[in-house]
Length: 243
Picture (cartoon, rainbow, N blue to C red):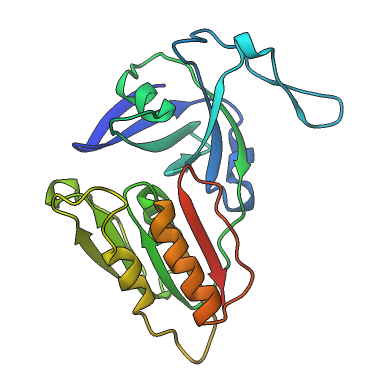
């Protein structure tokens, strides 16, 4: 770990440094599996590659805890990976680690994991803070001619952050303003209200608390008849569907 920066009161960006990071750019390079030390296992042993190509994990008393996070930015030449962490109360290995992070600390990473987003001419995107790093990464890497609409739910105006969006996707911010995360239905309802184009290729992507993801998933699948549901391997509920 080489750098720590608070983007908002509850979003912390941590820069990781390593060698030979080119494999993390494969398959769209959206997500990694991070391996965290914990209070119970402060000095874990990292898994090694077995003869069958699968990881061989240490015994439980030396095993790190694994969680999936988004690669917010990757620079293979400089050997750095940026990962954004939502800082919040409650039982969260990643958030707890990020709050205590300091330059020089070590963490393990594996991957990349997950599937790349299907290329399309038009997108509908939705995320709360848990899915925001991935949604922001999409906005910053999709082709400039891409059209569509994106909805981002945040706690309040203090959680706004800059996203370099070169696309033609319209971004709308929704603030909960005191409503607890997972209890505000406006994000799911906003995504459900979007009229999909009748021509051209289109793709829907959603990453948020499980209750909101369930609403969107069932609407896209059961009401609109969209197919090929895929769950994103994020630490939250999520769904992505092509037309």
